[in-house]
Image 1 (tube, helix red, strand yellow):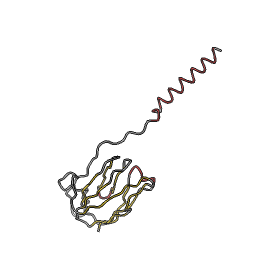
Image 2 (cartoon, one colour):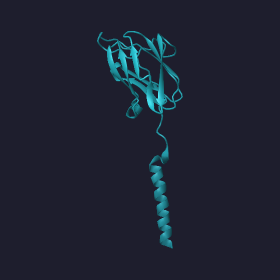
Image 3 (spheres, one colour):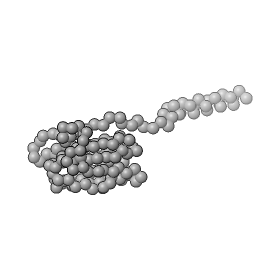
Image 4 (cartoon, helix red, strand yellow):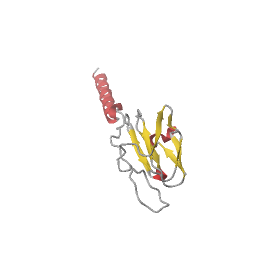
Length: 150
């Protein structure tokens, strides 16, 4: 009888330690800040990252482009964007249910959109070409697109 009690106690302690060590099923931490891209000055062939037009992303400047961040399935709507080089645009994101990014690495664009956050971000692309658009946390789920600058 005493051995059964010891074995039972050992199993309970092992289970409690296992749950504690694994985090008890808590969700991953969610980002809380929203870094913004900044403009840089470079040679004419260089990429100019997102330009906040001096307003810190707090108002529409230039043409407004609505960007939908789909979550079931994970997708950008539209899947492709075409911009004119040197033209300023305001990307308008409606509040998503999950954390997303609008990332065009070759243009220096890396916009973070937190859950429940409506966001406007001003960009002025200057490098002509076709570029890959990704949502970094959901790229593996197919949340990709294209950005064409002409």
